[in-house]
Image: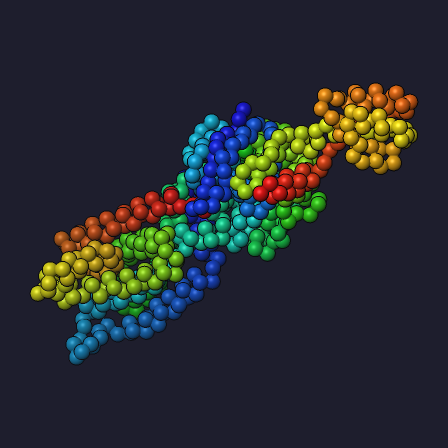
Length: 304
Length: 267
């Protein structure tokens, strides 16, 4: 089931285009990461989905309904970039307040709050004012309110910001757990390794426009580049490989090869076998998501 | 309903934990306690005229109501300044509006929360003064509460008026306009000025401008006068009813505009 369906969404502030023809779909059980530099349009996209700002052009549908309908937000849990909580309240009272806004009755609220405080390690400080909490603790309260109503869609703006590695891992496992239960997650993060680790799909935006999107695997895999590890290195191997492509890098017994069009990895295997050495591993060459992101942004700047 | 109560709960707890609220309340209580010193006799002489107990009680009621209303109105202006803006400035609005509530529900509940808090100041001050003057004068008079009840309209009026201005102007300016309008409404209610501006021997364009000013400035003073009259007389009379209709119409327009503007706002 499609949870969020965005079509040609554009948001302009005077002459500035914050988001330009942004189209995207979020399916059930999918975790989609949104990457971009500061001011790329990530938060604008999230605000538009939540109807905090109005689009200049385009449509947003939440589970098939127009996003202007406030009842669609019953199925959405949102975590803003900075934990904009009611700082004057204690953790338990703040969650009680947000539970009331979701529309949970007293019994459901109490049960849910106790469970969340325990899971987020906040039970012992539940009566403490949020204003004296550390940023990490505030982030955990904020995350708790986002998942309180058992939403079908989670929109998370920098969900692990301010958290220590232990809590980062815990939050990631909760996000994965929710996705496994059918919740669609749309998140943005500056920690690209985290997106690589957690998301099924990523969208890279720059200056309001989508510059690349796809499954994480396809984004980080460089087309026609392979990494080959052989049992021993021979000079003659390079000459033969250069008939079907280029050797880009040699590192001990490891070679990075880029194939010319019309050749496949099977041709590399055949050549190595003819030279009379063994193949230990042969795999597609992969970049990290961070490298992909930096390359894309640089590429775009050079084009300009 | 739970969501509506949730927003009211948020507004009330926000103010309930602010020092400003308790400072204003404490000063109000001090004023009331000090005013209790004047009820030590059953008659009082003003300008060589001795007021009898029945006139004295009318005066005491009016003074008490004016004191608590004035203090409550000042607080209501402060409340109106922050009703629609405090959560926007602190970005807490993102979390609130990401929940399944409409913007109309939000702004109406916030105004209602502000009304409850402002009324609590008037209630505490009136209750204390009511206890003091009843004890001092050895009587049981309930008519003060009629005036206090009517004052709720004034509070709702000032909160919606200042909230409306704060939605289109900086909130400091909204507070300033609120105070000026409150004071100006009392100047306009002075009979001599009213008669001169509306029906006196002045050019027609002055009369038109005066008429517009009387429509634009919220009828705070008229409602205060109505509350005082109702405490002392049983019937509001023709002018009382027209004041009430004017105030309610003004209130509905302010609330309606607040909702319309807030629904179009971007955060």
